[in-house]
Structures are given as C-alpha cells and as structure tokens.
Length: 156
Image (cartoon, rainbow, N blue to C red; front, side):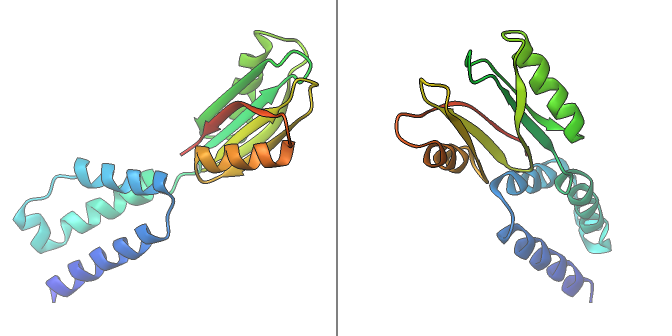
C-alpha cells in the first residue's frame, strides 16, 4: 500500500514537472538534491512529505522582476527574483536612475522573462516569455527593424 502511495507521489511530481517552466524544473531538482532520504524515510512516506514541503515552499513562489528605461539616454535598470512587484520596481528604477533622471518602469513580470529592444531614434518596445530568448525575440519583433535588445531579465 505504501509503495502505491510513493509511486503515486512520484507520478504526480512527474506530471507536475512536465507542465512547468525550465525555472520550476530547476527548483524541483534543487529540492530533490537538498532533501535527505534514507530507506526508512522512504518506507514511512516521510521522504515524500519532505519533498512535497520543499516543492510547496520553494517552487510555487511568485518571483517578480521589472525593467526601467529612459529612451532618450538609453539608461536602464532591471531587477529579478523579488518577493513583491513593488520591490522589483524600486530596484529597477533605482539602478536606472544612477544613470538618468528620466527613467520610468516600462515592464513588470513575474515567474518569467522580460526584454526591452530599442533603435537609435529612441523607439522601443518590450517582450515577455518563458525564457530569455523568447522575451528578446518578442521585444525585437514588437520594436521592428533596426532595433536591438537593450536589457533583459528573468525572474524564477
């Protein structure tokens, strides 16, 4: 009976992993590596409980990021992996304002990636995605010809 429960827990974790982003999969790997289990713990279900606690406490968190940008000067600031959107915005804005007083938040994101692309005239746009590459591709497509990625960030 216990083997069926453990097998079910492993199957559920596998299904959960299949539908998650690469960042969440890394979190699961970290939980598995950090959770000590001996044969008694496996048999009693303690191992599965510890893994589940780690998944819930570490892998299910919403992590925020933001990008601040000044199109005129090209100054930017970014943040990632903050507990709140407000903290992420404050960090991105503070970093950008070290180089320009005209910075503003142009992008907020959570548990994903964001990028800003711009051209020489100051035209800019942004993209969001599950990976850096996807966010950059979307930013470049939205901005159009002559644009280059200026800044990106991912929040896992």
